[in-house]
Length: 101
Image 1 (cartoon, rainbow, N blue to C red):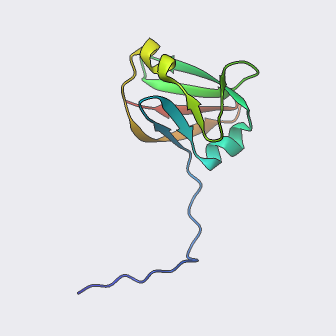
Image 2: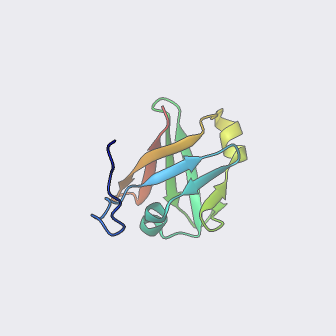
């Protein structure tokens, strides 16, 4: 038998930007929310690269704690992907990009 030791206070895990897509919503993890620091977000989609852009905005989808209801956005662009996706942050645009291809 091979046992692995559990260490509750091990090495720090690298901050990853994770965006989850469900049937009705987009869920942003803590690190994404800390970077955007927004109450409302603007959603955009590039059909060619299959990339979602999430950007802080004065108008747009309201964030309810960790999630933005996006069923209309998904239906408009025909997005049916679900799951967790690693995103990247663009500091110059203060935007998160999620590749769902």
